Length: 439
Image (tube, rainbow, N blue to C red):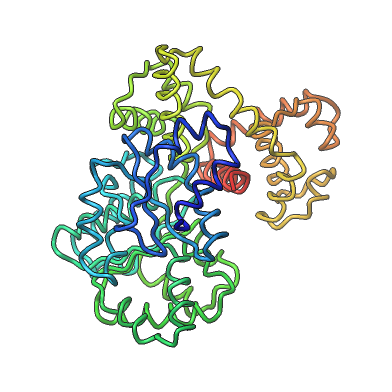
């Protein structure tokens, strides 16, 4: 029995029988198209594929790594696109990863544009039009699920049309390939692979932190490609200067071209994103449900799409329309669990670390401007990310009663309206906390 098949048997032991029979039982391992670091499963339809990818792909990847010792990319595909996968993967054994992992649905036309991502969108489009010229490297950073990978792969998909050789890897895949070639004493093969592409796309570069050997190799790869005018696009959950353990020479290289951030989407953009997702997935959903999801779900676009798929699946299974009450009932547990999983203490510790303040200062009576601002941030996040009541939050921060929290919240809302930088700070911190708790 292959490792990929054994993994599904292992998963069967960890989920309910009904879930296994409904989703996992129909998965088939595509041995011909898979490789050690790319494992492809085929299922019946696109909705099932998206649901399995959203809920189970990380678990499958973990089980595969436990069984094989290899950290692989898990791809959930459909029978209808199986031929396309085979066509891509049969180009050559070494170049297959350059295009197999590009999601063909990640295009500029499918990206939902808003104030929070317009600069990143326009710069990415410019890179796709004139690669290796104006913005090289392009470094896109922001919270989890905000569209960084979508824009990066949109660049790749656009340039793939003109016959460019594209390599798209997560940093972990780059590192795993480096380690494997180092062990097998085949570094010439590794360097030939990465330094003979036209476009290098590296996702999640933040994991390069404190990996000295890999940083050294990536530095030389970067220099070689850049000197030849090859386009480099990098994504990260933070700016280069905030990546701990990143050597100065790489920080400076990453800042050579264009640094651009993607911020959490404003409400209007979230509504537009949901409208786009339900259109692409063929889901019927009234406006009041769309507005409810936009107002109550987080900023992670993948999480939003997963919720849409779940609602549609439940609607089909129960043969009920997606009404507001139906949607509230379907996501109630998720919203409660999400809030319950975060404590005020965790928020205070996180805010203190991010803003370079002692946690004790946030609970003190100190009135220094830096402390007051940080305390406001912690109160705002505690109110929005936890189930604690205003009296409970007041007790934690040593305030007189709930009216003090109410007053603080009103003051914060006023500052948000007047100070764009403060609003962006709150959004970034909230996204980071949600991302940490989602792991």
